[in-house]
Length: 367
Ligand SMILES: [Zn+2]
Image 1 (cartoon, rainbow, N blue to C red):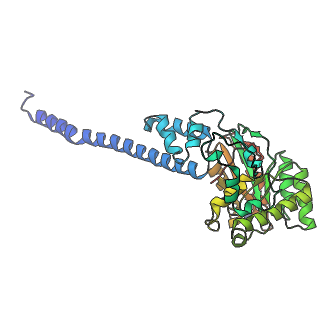
Image 2: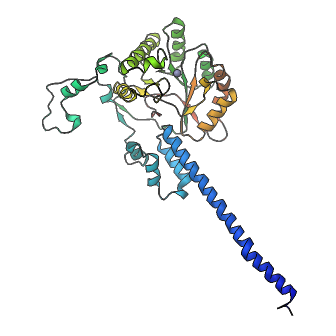
């Protein structure tokens, strides 16, 4: 007789054990792992979005790509993009493709010197933009009158290149004794780069600048002195330093620079007081600044391995990477690692990138 037998009770105990202990345990395990996976993904999403915003990445591709990865966790793409671009309505509109023409920037207003035209017809005009120009000129800061020829010559309209999967190598602080080595590596792989230079006005410096220009690389202004305290003392002192560097480059090469990079980047501890005015003034003059979103940390004394890994880890997930390197007399490690960095960028087995040079047609990467 099975019912009531010892065997029957054994089976009852086994069944109860399974139901009360094993099944809930398995459920807990499954739910727990799902929750932690979700938490990880959300954490990753948060940090990638932070990176994206900090790095100044403004490409719609970047947002699209992130959305594809995280769409399971988001109610809709619009919310996602609002989150990514919450500080910049214009970039948000760009990202969602409301206005395809948004990347077009009219530069006529930037390149024109301030004008006072008393005969201007202001009848029926309303709004700030239509205020009499005389009033604006009166309020204009005095530094706008400095160096009346210091304006970037930009095309009337700029349509940015579609530069998905592009990497831009940039070298600050040159020229130096290593400039020629850098040029040789770039030439070996037939690639162009961008040099944000610190010309000291010497013959040696000028010759090196000529080599950079002759090889077809982009030259942008970095600074004449690289003395943070001095150049960021006021907008006037920044302009004075910039003008000195600009003239030296022009005299040495005939190149009228349009691009520049702030020493220490556009946001640094030294320019807090004047930052907004300075950026507004440089932009008014038509100059375009580039920060970076990949830092080799070469100027911080990074080793070969650190530099190589910095490039790999910071570049792999970006659709437009601007890599910060330095061309300076202490930059031997940069020379040692440069060829391997180039090789990794153009063929790393994970993603294929193109290497390009910065110009006014590349959408700026700014902090
Ligand atoms: Zn520098």
